[in-house]
Length: 307
Ligand code: DON
Image 1 (cartoon, rainbow, N blue to C red):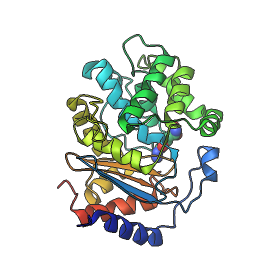
Image 2 (image 1 turned 60 degrees about the vertical axis):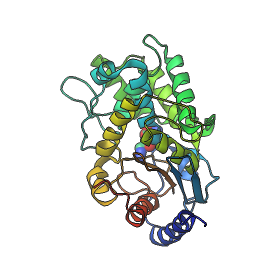
Image 3 (image 1 turned 30 degrees about the vertical axis):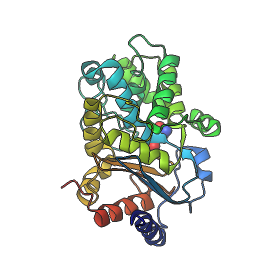
Image 4 (image 1 turned 45 degrees about the horizontal axis):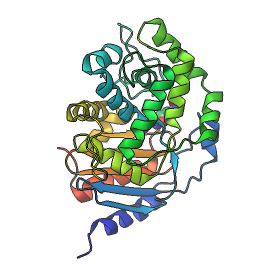
């Protein structure tokens, strides 16, 4: 018998395509403003590695902030819980993703916002790693999560480098508080390269399922990070992954998730499914409009809400 999943994905895609043409393309990175706003894709990966995808599933886009939970996972695996927690907190910021969200002790509030993600990038790789080694570790680690070697979109990377003043300012503030282990320029350069890795929705679904399967990539079988790391990462995604919309997201969708400014959304339901969505128009929180609607519909239709 044919699985009902492809038909459901098709139905959700059509329904949400009609509903979701509000929202705006990302304004913060000039190159992203050229994206085709009509693109829309959905993918799902089950815990046994079966993958389904519909819409513009072949289209690749830069991963942007969706890289953040995975780099947090790599830092935890490489440096251990105590060292990472000494540098980056786990509390929702209640502010936008590019705000100066620091705790009194100088730690960024969490690794899902820019200030925390730049700090986390510098914690990837073994203690004493150079900035270059951390960035190499990040790209290799993201690729292992996806189960294939990811390339970098050099045009988007260059475009973000030209408009990096705010991220540089954030990095300097953390450095001044003693929480950033690399030079601010090096950390921001590496972080921008991390955000420019190219993925499609299938990659997102596999990456999500890897987190939801205790760190074991369900397609390649590789143990990417230990299971305790995934519990930590999914918990922080649940409270901080959708920025200011995290509470609304958890009540309506009920799946730990992470969005990115190019229009991707990734969600992981532990032990069950990983989901990837892509559509470039964003709401005022920086989350994909159609992607969010599609998650809501899939959660309802498939009974995925955690509660
Ligand atoms: O640092 C930035 O602003 C971007 N590279 C990533 C921001 C992002 O994806 C926010 N998510 N919605």
